[in-house]
Image: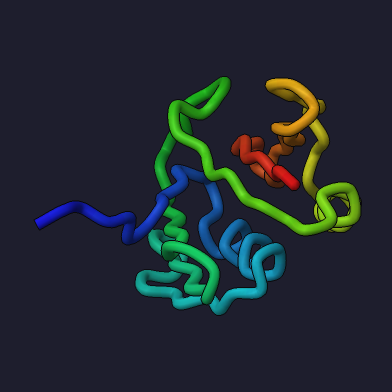
Length: 114
């Protein structure tokens, strides 16, 4: 039986706040499984996002990150930045494969391609 992606989990300091931010970002719904300790966001377009409180989230760049696609990449990046994300820069592998790297309010990197 092959594996499938069920959930992508973020280590963070405040799972309730970060889950609420991501729920708004992806149009999902928050499920506070263990409020303050573990919260999930379910949405129609991808795997469940999990947020778990840890005493010291890994400093620096994530070893795993989430990649998103948007029909209008620049509009989506602008919306996320206005909501509290940080634009970390634009990248490409030529003109046909471009993306923007962002960070959520706790510094977790993610990408938006278009």
